[in-house]
Length: 68
Image 1: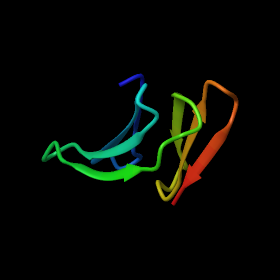
Image 2: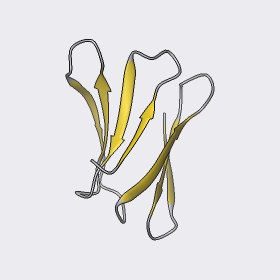
Image 3: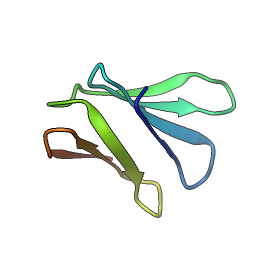
Image 4: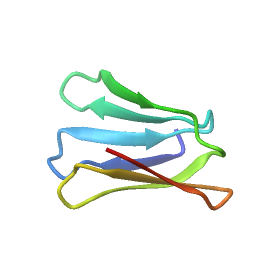
């Protein structure tokens, strides 16, 4: 895991990894609840929208993906 972001409700965290994936984890159970498709490069930063409905992932090649 290379980058982490807390969901605004603090019940989830998102992680970005050198395997080019972004995952959403349930903090209470420790289970991965969503696996986002592989990025074009390794994610280097993650940010949730203030309402928690979207997650942006920036990568080392300068691209950005936004997930609902």
